[in-house]
Image (cartoon, rainbow, N blue to C red; front, top):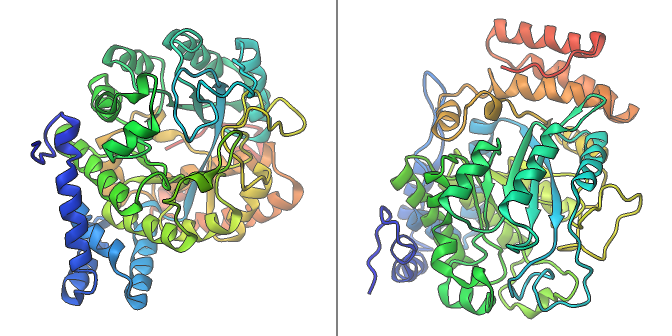
Length: 482
């Protein structure tokens, strides 16, 4: 029997089934243990020091106790501390991105995804480089600066060379004032050499959802294709980091397996990356199973309601305070609004989940990977965020200045968000308002920028940011960054 070891490179040892089951039993036994719960909450609370906030974070066992706790007053306290933690380390910035689907050819048999190989009535499509260029121009005309590219696993139709060509094309499109400044990549598990090639191509974060950490369920949900190999998939982040990619993004697809099991496995994976590579995940995504062509979410009996979903999000934020958290347009405006308060730091906007969807005037549905619940335009999402007290950020400065991996985490932990990320967010927002925003959104945004400039602690930084924003507005200058 495998023994739990977060420093091991073997999937069965760092995601250890026995340890997860013992964790869930421990959480159930202690879900009403008030002295323990209060001690865990006190540990989770961010502490303000001379150079900024510090936070210990929580182990997977401690966080699982909070997730199991069903005492209303303690749940509210979890929510309050999650909000404090998000504001302490990320401020009121919300990073904006969009997915770009390159190809829906796939050789896997994943039963929850409409791209599975046996689905014969979904049209298969793969973008040419000219079509990629048209998609990028459409995204630039919306105002996007950061993309997450997606493709099915198909070594014939979507080899690594195709992905690399697409990245090169995306970075090469300069349309009016538009540029894609960061390309994140969500493709199938691959080799160290291929990860090295992705790093050399200039990618930002490598994202790979585990889907489920429960091995038996994983094998049943992925009955055919290379993704059936649980160990190869689960160990992919180690290979990515070996290949030089120090920003990696984890995630599970909530609804496939019991949420408490997935929650513990997700945090154990984060602990493993920290133990082996010295830095945890750059981001954690929290998607839920959604309806799509050939896929009925009701066929999966582990769905979670909105309140449980909120609690999961808050507890992840307490466990990994320095990690970015992502929620997509899979979720409704109302759900996104609540979760933004509880720890989310990145959202997609104006998304289309079909291959070639952005260049089409009408939203196509025939090649969508999942139903988009929040179908508002990017302009509407930006205005909504600002009206709710958030700063929509199109910033990519840390990636482009080499502040990735442990260097980004050091910035986050040192309390320099307000002197670095905050002004960068305001300058990129000013670019968006000048180039793409509706008059209504621009009016809201200009007021927000003036208000938020005053929150920059260092006078010199504040004045440089103010001067740069004037250059953006009055002289057409772009791409300032700290």
